[in-house]
Image (tube, rainbow, N blue to C red; front, side):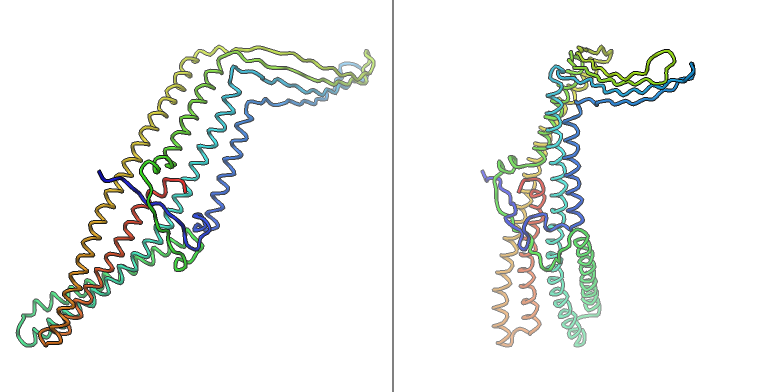
Length: 392
């Protein structure tokens, strides 16, 4: 059985790393997204720590003469130190959430890189298509000249000449369309990169195995991190309804002045202790069940993602196999035109063929070599979809 294989980039010429192909603005956006993920992870890992409440108050009373003034400053702390594993699961969830979000951004980044590389290859492909179209236009012009000469000496009626002219015009219009398409591709590349497309050589892809593709697949890893997220969320949800131990402490500083009945004083004191709590929630079992279902769903999504990536790999492999068959056909055609050209040149020298025959075959032979180059680019365009899914 033929072994499944795929191509991955070895290097980007003139680029220090893959994302160097991206514009500075796009790289800045990506860096900001990474910083946001880090900041959010730090926040989540500390969410279990309760606030320390500070309070400062000043009261005036005119109930007695003279009026009295009271200043009170308090610090209160009520901090859980044990939540039946809830603190541990909160920290682990923050870590899993950070990995999941970083991988999501990585996939977005690779998608941008993938699009830029695809544009580079598409520009090269359109250049080859323009080259081929020019050869076809040249052949059509030769055909018009031949038909015109044959019409003038009465060997053909005007319908054949008209058909040849229409073909030439159609090919020339096709050439203009290719040039318009090239302008659009260059514009799109400029939108995504600060580099000059003429100075960047797109990556050449090399082979790795199907197993390596699955082991390095970012979509599969992301789905696996999703399982971790949901597992810690599920466990954390359960612990919300279990006993929690908290320490309590407070510091109070109070000042009383101008009291008619009490001596002015300034005093402070501390209190401390602990509490054990366990909430009773009528929806407790429903919330736990929902968390369990989300966890179960993430496991199913992981298997579904894995199957989808395998199908992607195998589909691209089959498409590449078809391109390889087209390549073999293009090479066979090139060899055929080469032999025909050699024969036609010999017969032209013998006076049996015209220069039109020689030039037409020469151009046709060139188009087959261009076809081969286009098909090799088509291979790379197929494999870019794989590159976007795996680690470098």
